[in-house]
Structure formats: C-alpha cells, structure tokens
Length: 250
Image (cartoon, rainbow, N blue to C red):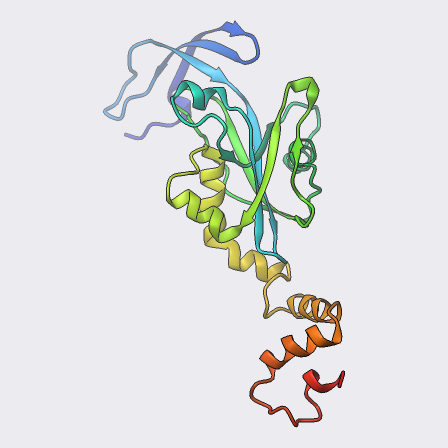
C-alpha cells in the first residue's frame, strides 16, 4: 500500500513561538506503509516558507561570487560561524517572484546586479523539522568590480563578498570547506553544468563572444606587448610571414 499526502490527518496546529522566526506545534496522524493510520503524534515545525539562493557567475573571467556573514546556527553547531555561502534570502514581499528575490538579495548582500538567471534544483534543507523550501539559481554577472562589505543596516547585516575562480569554489566544496546547505547544493549543480552555462553565455574561448573578448584584450595592449603575445599564437607561421599579426606593428 502506498502512502501519500492525503494520508495525513491534522488534528491540531498552534503557534508555539513567534519571534525572529516562528515555530508551530502540529498534532497529526499519518498513513503507514503496512496499511491503516498511525497513532496521533505531536511535532514542532520551524516555519520558514520559501527562500531563494543564487550563485553569481562571470563567464568571461570564469569566477563566482560567494559571501561570508555570521551564521548563528553554524556557531551553535560548533562549526565555523563566518563560513562561505551563497547569496540567499526569504520571499517576504507580496507578489514578489523567486527571480525578484534573487535580484534583490544580490544587490543587498553583494552590491551586484544580475543578468540572466538559470534555475538550479529546488530543495528542502531539513524537511524533518522545517517547512523551508529553497529555490536556486545561477546568474550571469559581471564580477570585475565585485567585493567589499554589504548588507542592510536595518537587518544588522555585515556581509563580505569574496570572488574566486570557479574551479577553486568547487574544490572548497569537495574538501569540506563549504558546509552551508544552499552553497553545497548550488555548487554541486554548478560543477556539473558550468561548461554548458559558460558556452551559452559566451564566456568560453571557443565561442564568438569569447573570441571577441580576446581580440578586445589584445587591442588594449601596446604594440610591443601585442607583438609579444601574438608571437605565441603564430609560432607555426614563421616570423617572415607578412600576413602574421605579430608583424603588423613593425
């Protein structure tokens, strides 16, 4: 016999605590895999509702943006309390979409404007005791000027932005440095999808946009610097080739 959401009978629900967060006390019975209904049980649930997490990614420089801020739950668990995590926030305004929240939080927590958003996997971080569901995104962003300390003074936020190479961020996930749930989920997904994202956003060296970026970078160099760089690209043509870019400024 299967068990589904219809096999739940709620006989009571009261607010046990209502402060910075809310805890409700549920009294209920639920269906059993062997058939019939189980006994009445009481469970406290940490009510969080929907949240959004976003990983800003710069496909041109192949870097991601992470943040650090004090996390009381990590401190209570005996873990580093100012740990690497992703930009995240709760859906707490009427008619606000998940995409709206991602963009708002990126500005508030990191001072960063987001471009195109690509949906990552939604997940329940602790469904045994919390109602929170987190919707995730990876966002295209220009991180060339990202950094500094941000956050809303009205919410007592003190958030430091850190950018790093995408591969370094994934390595920190793999070595256990990254423990915050949203960052674990998003970086795991990102590691499997980075090449697709970068190609689609024109950041890779083999895409038209990537070639254009390389040309623009060369044009910004002095003739001597450009000659030195282009010589590396033209090793196969010989220095007496009149069509070689490394000789155009001679």
